Length: 475
Ligand code: FAD
Ligand code: NAI
Image (cartoon, rainbow, N blue to C red; front, side, top):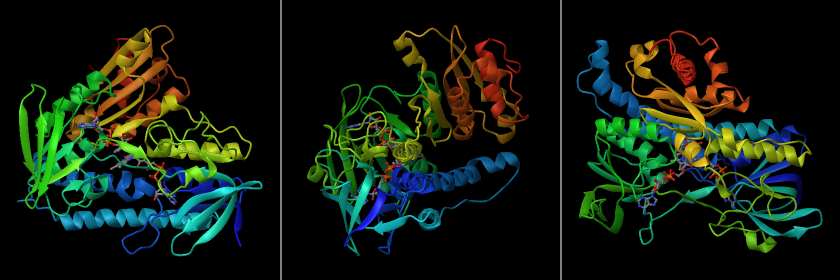
């Protein structure tokens, strides 16, 4: 006997579990299927984000930042600590506890919203009258029928051809979050978001870290001025980033890993290290979904083809998050999940791709929303720019972190904000104001005329908005 639901979400990452909650709020009978297992074999909803992504990486970034502060910056405040040591096992254990709290939180939310959760793999069987038959395989096999199906099966780390992840020496994000002792030497391939965040964790804890990047430019998607400022800070910290390299042979052995590469000058070099983290992007995941059984269309990257509203090639089947086009971000997946549930209910779901913020949780943090200066130039848009350095912000001085700046880009004629770019302390929190402003189509002057608390880092945002009109007050 099959169980019938109005909506079935396959995957309980930020896309799937949030879609399920919103659908339940809208009065639908909802099921959510997820196969992730915790170390004891039990359910671990939350997807990549909760288990091996956003949450655990931020836990390790926080621990390693405390270590860095205690080791190098407490003395400036008159605090002496003696030699600071790090118990890596305890740090990783704390991270695991944070992950478990989040897994349990999602299971609680399923109960609270009367969502039926199935722990196992969900696969399409066939289209049936008024919906789709979905098979759940796992500890308790079940057959379900869903009138509407939301696919939110996420993504997996991309491996280098010929170098599979063994999660001991050659690590994906999964292994990178489970390293049991500080490696003496660590190599990362790819200086994108994961490379910089994970490289920062282990550099702070004392590893000699080199990041090999294939492209000649550093953080090409980031505003050039901001990327330059960030690179200066990373160089100063001793995070070695080599741009424009071509990675060659990778050999693993008892002693670790040996990476050969050609640098930007064309010199052939070899790096020996204890561990290698490969962070060269992620691939959409449809393994086990049995998409072909129902003729669900995938593109050449393996992503599920969707329209602007997350409709797939099949009526009543939707797809959201990392498994479809667009940035691979948890909050983008969530927004799509909410919008799809609302569209199923006949409402007008809303996702504004122009105001999705990005944050890189390094120190300094890097955050942005909207277009960069180089994009505006390429698009031929006349713009005005205003910047304000944290060096001139009282709160930043009191915090002891004056790296970086806030930068506004506004339309030269209308003054509408087109992009805001931040490198510096708490950029991840500061960017929210810019997102709200852009969502409401604010002008730079709107922000410049709003009262910001003193002393606060947000005053740098106001000052950067003032700088668009060349009238900063404190610089
Ligand atoms: P996922 O979170 O990948 O969830 C998919 C779920 O579906 C998984 O639980 C999987 O087990 C399950 N599944 C797959 N197939 C099936 C099936 N057939 N049956 C049942 N279950 C199935 N993003 C941010 O916004 N901020 C960050 O700080 C951030 N940090 C990150 C750090 C790292 C190291 C990594 C790797 C990623 C990070 N991301 C971050 C990206 C973020 O994790 C993803 O964008 C987000 O998890 C995508 O959500 P999703 O729901 O689409 O997929
Ligand atoms: P990424 O796309 O951010 O960076 C990959 C980097 O690897 C790029 O700079 C690319 O040029 C480089 N690269 C690709 N192939 C290469 C090769 N063969 N040799 C050398 N360099 C090569 O991907 P990453 O860091 O793996 O992260 C995946 C995604 O996860 C991110 O794009 C992001 O969507 C998400 N994420 C988000 C975070 C956040 O929001 N703070 C944190 C971590 C991940």
